[in-house]
Image (tube, rainbow, N blue to C red):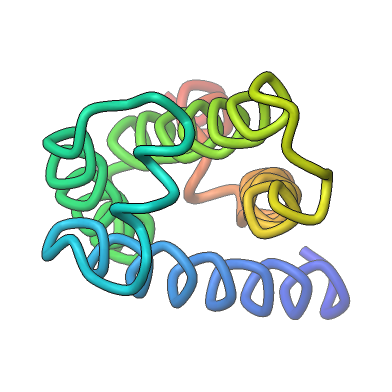
Length: 129
């Protein structure tokens, strides 16, 4: 892995981790304006606790060593959560600026996944066996 790819991976992964952890804690505790956002999107408030908990667990999965299958599932969860949030904002007619945080985290999720080291990829591990 080149130095540029390694730096890109870690910068995107740290940004993703901070974003998901901060959002996850706020959602789990239902603070920081998330109640209003979720209500405007037409979702029940209990969804925040579920999403927040899964985001926190996803960050742990992304950062712990080994466990490539668990990491893949965490990335998939982040992808679905952020693409779903983006689509939800746009579907209710909100301006794209309201969806921008979700779009940014979606792009960072893709970057972190794409640039992850080989020892964090399932395919590479299967080739080794």
